[in-house]
Image (cartoon, rainbow, N blue to C red; front, side, top):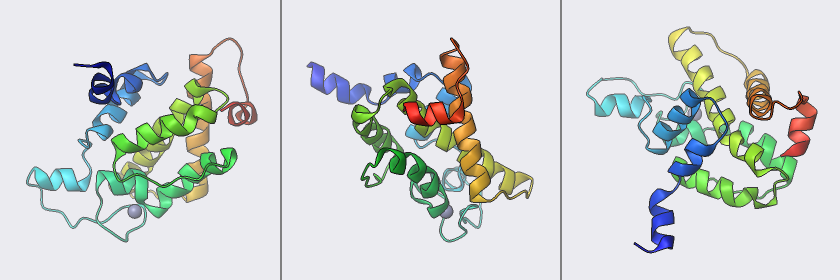
Length: 175
Ligand SMILES: [Zn+2]
């Protein structure tokens, strides 16, 4: 197998495991990229009958790619980082493609390792909010979820680079 084919075949798996986030989060991102997270579309494939509605926007069926990429609620989290870097972005149709595009967009990031943590922060914050609405009937507004996402990013950056504790502003400025 030549190297370019091998790179595509390996994509995005080695990047997922290299990202400096907790192991359970890497596992979650890996499942997402394989579209195997237990969203309603996947539960229905397993035979569970549901009235499938996205818990965040209520407008369409909940699929992995809708919930984590295209939902108007989730898009607001992506926009925090895209606006910060002034990046024009067309959301890809699949999670694995989004990881690839994010890597390419990160060529202009100041710190690519921190940039790579961003999708996991968005997805973990979205999944927690979705589960809070689904299982506990607790609904947080988008501003709260945005803040959760930024705090996760900060927390994971501080864990990965524990030389000194950096503030939210420093983290956002450094990606
Ligand atoms: Zn939605």
